[in-house]
Image 1 (cartoon, rainbow, N blue to C red):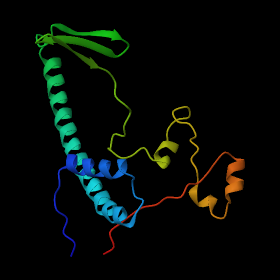
Image 2 (cartoon, helix red, strand yellow; image 1 turned 90 degrees about the horizontal axis):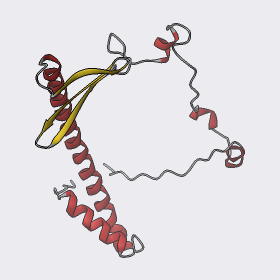
Image 3 (cartoon, rainbow, N blue to C red; image 1 turned 120 degrees about the vertical axis):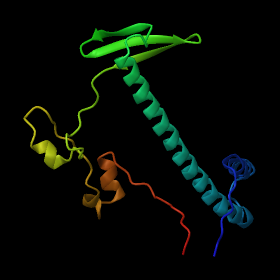
Length: 166
């Protein structure tokens, strides 16, 4: 069984950059170096994405709570919330020489039940609340050649992906 050892993201990036800057993957030896490094880079990126999501979640919750406090306590802001334009209110507070602005405005429209805005749901809304959206039907291109696609301003590039065989 292949056991991957944990490596710092910065070290993995240095190794990858060194490989790329010194001729890239042009020999079998470098090819054999590149594959494990590729997976280490992907693992590091995935780990960092999870950490970023955790940071964003904490920031979102702090923002929500601080905004709630500022709305409930009129003395929290130096410049209290006041209407700036239709449905938008602003207020500011200065802390250690930095002025922070709170803007309270209507958010994006969402379903009451928390569900997604599916095509079926949108079809049931009053006329004028939705519009048609064109998307490519990938299955329609089966058997369509590059020349035909090019006549319509389209192309399909070759996708190459590595995976670890079980």
